[in-house]
Image 1: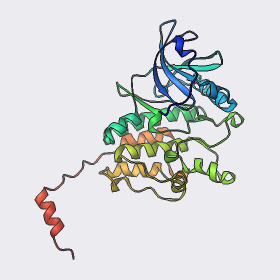
Image 2: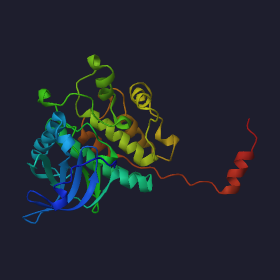
Image 3: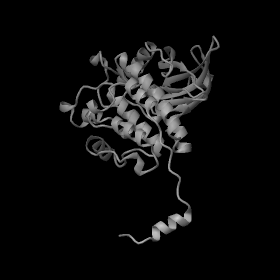
Image 4: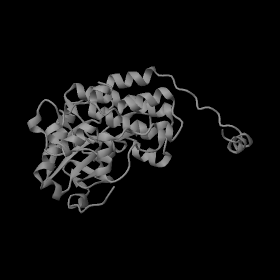
Length: 304
């Protein structure tokens, strides 16, 4: 993660309120996440805003909204929150400490993970999103870096800093959120043509999840280029078929392409429907590659 200036006055004493800080797990533009132990003995991931970020009203409000939303959720595929507070002007949030790695880290190391494993992870995330959407929220930033894969195979969605409340529009922070390679077309329109952007709902998250599945089975994302080029591609360009880059079972390719439909009405309409589609398909084994002499002969054979 990118390093940023951070007020470590509390960390220098290895304490933040009732928490003893043991190690830095990650550091981003606005917060540091520590492995910490409460005075009661609970191990947590302690997310602490930097002093600079805490001074910005919209960041502080987003942080507080993230806690409020997570405190209302209880699903095995969504990170749990235990506590929140503030010490000497530094807001913090105590989250479930997970043993594992992010899907981004896994893909950086392995590039692809195979169809069966990819389907299992996406099925879990789709069910978590179905629960989330059913309670009126849109995550808005579904991507490999926001999915933790634990040692026992659980896929857990985290980082709800951009969460959108479909039932309380006035409480949502202004602006466009998400990560360009994973943005649904309607999220792009909210930035490029807000007057014609449709209302945001859970189908935007399912598009992003389709991009995640695309990357897991092909080793690449559908669109590349500058930020503006990627956003334009989400709006106007059909994604290359996954099978152009790697063997993908036809049934799985059809699911991916449906998830990436430009029009939300052409996608899966719920996380449960997406998960069910993955449960019902039959994978096709990759055809064996011909032996080298046969391949050479096919290359040299005259074309008609």
